[in-house]
Length: 113
Length: 106
Image (tube, rainbow over all chains, first blue to last red):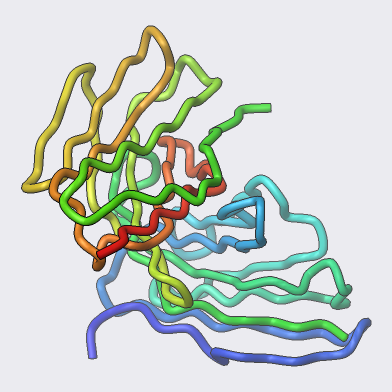
């Protein structure tokens, strides 16, 4: 089906482990984004990508790594998970950067114990 | 620090009333503004965007932008229980407010 998907939808991991969250979109949108959503903070941008092999930091990039080898995929890796990274993570895609609607995936709820 | 501020609520209105949601932003260079609706446990979805000063209407929704005062608002007319959700204001450089939770009581 067309759209934007995320996997896994729920993940529990331990402090210090590496975990990768996957994001896949079928619209061929050039831009993709990763946000985290925490109570009281709304959505905060972690990283974004303008195209394959082009990524840039957002507001809260520390502790995260991204890659984009293919237009449709934008994985987010937590290299050594910490409890402060417990959050709901949303991936989004868009035709452009600042003035275009973003389409959000269903989210991944990550708990770091 | 470029900020986007919203009252967290909750905002409670009776069915059929007008709900007014407000957002202020600090970056005077912001050019585009978005309102997303997020139901509990779901992802945000766009309901309105506005680029120019003034009002923009779409059905029961009206977005209002005042760049001189640096605020953008969303009015929901004839509010319905199905409008109960969190409303997120977003500014063009991918900055979101914390959201305002709206409850429409039957």
